[in-house]
Image (cartoon, rainbow, N blue to C red; front, side):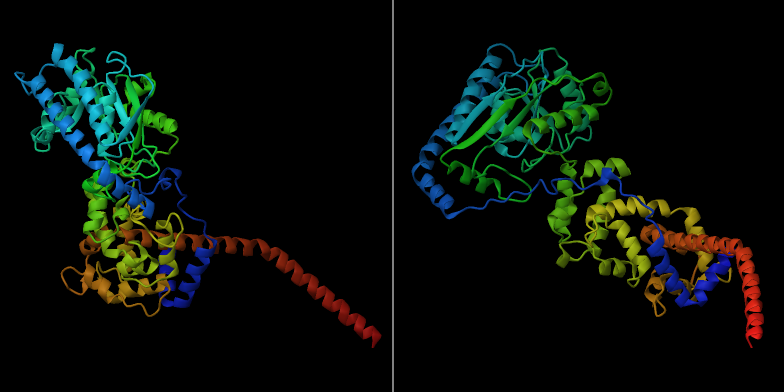
Length: 556
């Protein structure tokens, strides 16, 4: 019988020994998994939430503005809007709508200057005071404008101050009354949600325009792809950087005491924000044109590096941090809400985690569903040690606490969804190999007949977890797919593959065995080395005893 098999039989027959073994190993063994700095949580945990705390004075001020200023603003707003629509209709008449060729001549001049002036008047009618800092680059110097942070539907002011460049817009927006005609005058790059080739076509169109050497208007892009609360810059989409041409960064600031412009996934609706904004005496906005950013040789080989470096440059200019959140985090927030979890539970920094762990959107969505079935709403949608044990259908034990601690990266006593995803990918899936499953099956199959009975299954679990009264009948029934009362290898394997946490629990248990065997071997070697000294001490003790007895006789 092998040394490992003897050891397993020992812990199966002596439960007090098993419990003391687990405690000793947990106290002495060093952690197996060092924390990776690349997975440190972001400085801004949720950039998609914005709350407005209105004081009594704020409410009184808005009521007064609504009564005395708002009527004049509405009249001016409608007048400017209808005038802009009329001018845009004239500019775009008798030209194809497929944007095959750029608008030239008087049409482009009217768009660039006259509609731009109407745009400034349009924002003035809503109470905006616009301050422009820096100098706008020409189309030859920078074919692309990248604007951040993107935090509001009012960010369109960047289009007006940058000379009415083309923008990237959804195809459906062209059909919106009045605004659709104004949008057509900009010759936008249209994105279709129906066409499966839309993404590739959009990239090709942006590349064609930005490499036309001034033939087409400049292209303005919000690389973040969604709105945030301006507390940080999130991941930049690569679309603006794929052509590998120089870009001019544009940063936006709204230096107001009361922020009524920020529109995020958790906050006020468009209608409420618009009403509160136009009922302010004045809303300040700063548009700063930074120096043109020319890609280096390394950045020309890697557009992701190019995008990240431009983001870092803009974040330093704004004096704010950056995170790896992206639009997919917002989708996970909505999924979390549908699963009755707090919306922020879905935030994982999708860009970073998906790249480092090679995970797709479907992986996150499925794991969020599993996470929601485990998490406790009373703990803010997190998993505590009790919920973790219930999910595994096991009692809280020292071994389970060690596994829980590996998931709990920030040591706050709970597991959030981000920690759960990282733990499953780093801890459990690597442990869920064919060799590990085969080894586990052989250890559970004590009599070696090719199947595992409930008694065999429970005896090893009880001894390894140090819980003598453990009831594993429910867990065994879940594994016994054909209800035969025995587990064949395929049933055992399928369960391990669909529940990777058990694989890590088992490999942790094997680590304990290896460590204890190593300790026993060291103690045996130390005992062997001490045998000569012990024998010598015994001889000395005998001589001393003889001398003492003879001296005693002389005294007598």
